Image (cartoon, rainbow, N blue to C red; front, side, top):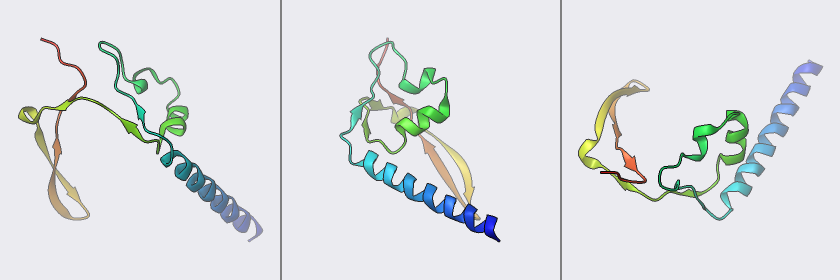
Length: 97
């Protein structure tokens, strides 16, 4: 029983720390993550995805570009027993010929 109580206390502490981290990140000024022309996105070369996740999750960002509604498509999905569709729309940050 002692181990269970210790585990639950650690879980509670972890959740509180994560809530504080998220609140702090959400209050920051948004960062423009639009890649320069012909360069990659920040996450393209991420070597450690856990580190990238901890640094960037719940941070406000902006991204400049355009949606291409002519090329969007639908994927049939089922969620909690209900059928629906997920609409995928390409987003371009730069256009080439």
